[in-house]
Image (tube, rainbow, N blue to C red):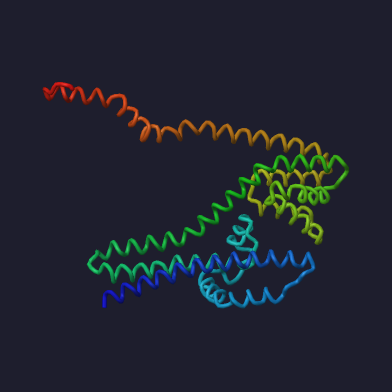
Amino acid sequence: MQTILQILTIVLSGAAVGLVVLALYNWVVDNALKKRLTQIIHQGRAQAGTSLSKTANTQKVASVINILSKLSIPEEGWQSSSVHLKFLQAGIRNKNAPQYYFAVKTLLTMVLPLVLALFLYFTQPDSPFARGMMSVLFTAAAGYYLPEMVLRFITNKRIERMRSSLPDMIDLMVICTESGMGIDAAIARISHEMARNNPDLAQEFYLSALEMRAGANRIEALRNLALRSCLEDLDDLVSVLIQADKFGTSLAEALRVQSEMMRSRRAQRAEELAAKIPVKMTVPLILFIFPALLMVLLGPAIIQLMQVFANKPSP
């Protein structure tokens, strides 16, 4: 009976892991399918039959993911929630991304600790209850915070990529404004020019250009740009653009000053990282390099001293 219960626990654990892998695979397939459909529409070779067949194959998995995501996803106010803003700041704009995110979060928080509890109960019945409960609670906490940590890691990497290319984009904006373009035309132009070097930053400016074309207020579109980017330097740039638009000051001169300020900040960040290197190298030096060095230098002397005190002649 115990063997059957162990096999059942292993099967349930495998099913939970397989569901996570299948959800990630469904997400990747959905993104690849949308990119392929966009290419087909631009090329004029629509293949509706293939897309429908792929969609039909993933309906069962999508239904399971929908059930799991309903346990965690906010029912109301999703568009104005902080979680939706985190997805925008991470550059994830797929409409199915929240369902996959909350489905994985529910699976890791509820299903995986339950499987672990069953596994410990049937495989280690004599183990202390407190230790098993702590393991289950630790697994649930790790499953709850792991998706958030991954999302935060993706956001930070995206912010670093945008921060490194922002001074170059401001220089392009200075060139565009000095050639006679307005703010709207300059934003639209640099979003196309920087699409290859930094697609994240170019995408944010392109969305702001689309908002202004759709009739949104320029100040509102620029503030939405700063909100989506979650970048302090870009927030300062948006403030400069808004002030130049309100007071009618020279936009090119303000952008040039802002570009120099951002380049000095980038140099200061590099100097700060360089100054932290000796402090970070202290721990590896003490734990790994110094013991090996002392062993090589003092090892023979210590061996000879031990031989002398033991009254043994050296060979």
